Length: 231
View: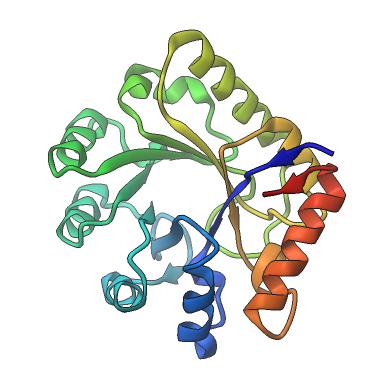
């Protein structure tokens, strides 16, 4: 059995807020970053998390925060995240036309890392003009906006495409998948081979009554479905 070091980034919109301190304290010892969704109710029909929430996470964790901006006004929110010194700021490609180079440069000038996110319907070709500037590319494997959406297997082709592009051109971006990463999908996702798995309710937070047991179940699920042993 191959031994691997899979990187799981918990999506904090899916955590149990009544166990906020308990879950973050445990996860701080097991993950290398957190995924935080900012939704404005316009780009997607939902509203989640906020700068205040980021501040509360900062009180309990020094891990890098990867911000997923599901917002219409990318310029406003990018500046808010720069002010908060969020290590990764990931913008939706669908809202970046005419803004991409400016905002990527703005993020980099602040000493932070810039990413883009692609909705299930959005092809990789949309970001080719600035792909060489990106630190991370996130592929949505579900329709964005809500937890628990249907997994869209066809989106995994973009992960494969991005890995091939990176290998051929020497790009340095990380490849991340976002949506319905769980026992049911681990095998398919592993075959596409992203660098980072975002895990939420179905893959982590709903598996047991406490976060330690949930984490153990998630790791076991990954190992059983992929045939690989986690370090």
